[in-house]
Length: 474
Image 1 (cartoon, rainbow, N blue to C red):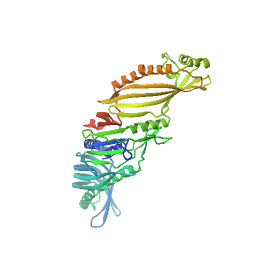
Image 2 (cartoon, one colour):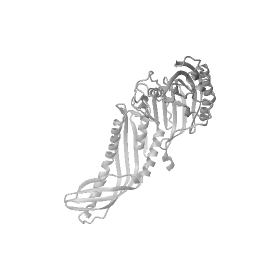
Image 3 (cartoon, rainbow, N blue to C red):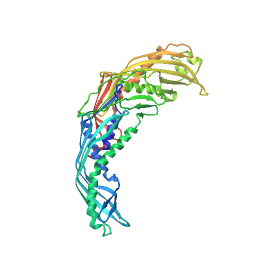
Image 4 (cartoon, rainbow, N blue to C red):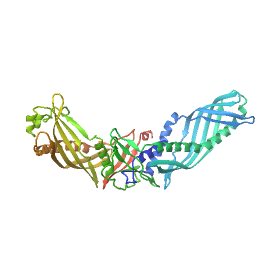
């Protein structure tokens, strides 16, 4: 059950809609059944590690009440049929378990006044049936879950007590058997509801600000109630990124999109332009989109190095004013990159600047000039089996002299040199990697399978099945 709830939690962090969702996710009936299958396999393999709580009570045996406790209990065997689970339109999830049988061993103690006794026992429950309905909703922009119906039945319970030295209790063991059987029947739904209430408490306490890394966090609040159909569960999360230190709204608004429900895949995910652009804006505000390039970062075999002498080929006055000094380049995004998705094509506009410094012997940095670059790229991406593939091309690149401390100079030669580097070295190397494909990520053994990614107008859509480490147990 916990794995199913974890899956719902993960999906609830992947969609938003009130002000138009930046992320949308759908868990199909196929996906729900697969999660249930994983849960069943996981439970079967973890039964030996499950610690059962003590059972305490008292029973009347003609002369008065006898207190008892069952403890150190462990599951020896469990016949766990795969539950029947389905979405219930407009409500949530219907869950039925039929024919569960479990064998438990443990220790027992009894007390009647000053008389104590104890030993060990074997308990077998046959044909346990559970029928529940879980309601999914939203409260305070968080996913909520509650039990709206629960019924349980146990066909029979066998309890065999062993040990014990007091002859007083031996004739009355049948009273314990009947009492424990009734207790089990009464407490199955009680225990189930308690677990759901604990999960609801966790959801209510969960922060809607999910830290991504030291630079940004993402708002994962729900923007409307979950949409439950017989074919699946749809969730919408705000999906907007903010700088940790400078949380501000971006100068653009979210765009509405409708994610297609793919019932033939376990999960469908959709990310709008706003999702990607808000991330770019947050990282730019956080100061993460910058890098300081020094000469020791350039391969020694390179024909070009960062020093005033070599830059003199492009800027003649530079070595005359500052002869033979090493240089540094601070590259940074002067504005947030802007992405757009247009039916099969991803476009991105990048505004960047490069500040050049000459470094004196005492490490003092002398500002030289600033070059401003406007560039645009377009690309295509798709998934081939377990690899992300694609192609990227540069559409345009222009350069201007933003500021100078050494006098004006023509930037045309530098612009042409940068275009040559991009078209002859950077893009070919990147496209070679994209042609071979980049492996899709795996998280704690979970990975994507049979994935299909499409670029739509205004959003990316991914339909996929999920592979899990539990699949190897079959």
